[in-house]
Length: 336
Image: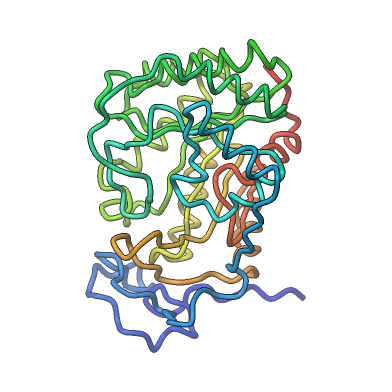
């Protein structure tokens, strides 16, 4: 008989870390349940100066495809989230000929506690960017293109028109390529969402990122319920478009909170959910509370699929676009 792993036991921490420093006092949970933190932890419960666990060590392979893609991105003045967000899978993906394009520049108007992308005040909007992305997709011969962006709260529609134009431009030069867009919350501007959805991407992705209790520190300018509503409305606008979301773990969440997020996104009609380990980009970012083991990620996958989410991609190095093409094909995706 398979034994479930005891992810949570004392104050939201696994048993082996129960001796760590106690969290600051917070509101008590349900009767008999753990007390929940009112603020995120300041130091990882299993912090070690020797480095990350073995399963998080990545071998950098800078082969010919990696160098070719890097030169292509610079030559076309394009940005990739792989580089800007310090994705741990960049070398693997680039060597296999895939990349996630980041449009709307490389300066984000938000400063989330987990994100390595530069924040500040953007200075321009490049209307020629969609054509260059399309050129790169065609040159790379991509069967599945992933397009994301910085958040542009300075723009009336958050840059939705550029998303729309990029989808159209890629489809024009590479009609056999399926397209996935990872969009910001557009500040709850549903007209901006409609502009994006009208271009009919095969997958509409918007990440929840974490559990609602941690939003003030992880996503201080976002609203949990608003992100859920975006996913629900996207599915309502076009039921044929697959919807997708993702969270990071290791920020101080409890197993019960993860389960609730899964139930919420399932109720919103989400088709694909990704779960990966949060890795601290720098000392200026939120600390890692816990490194989940591969076995614990397997447990989370089983939990999500038991709740009813059609596909859950769960693993230490999983990120939003990891195995994106395989997910699309598994769910019987057809280019629209």
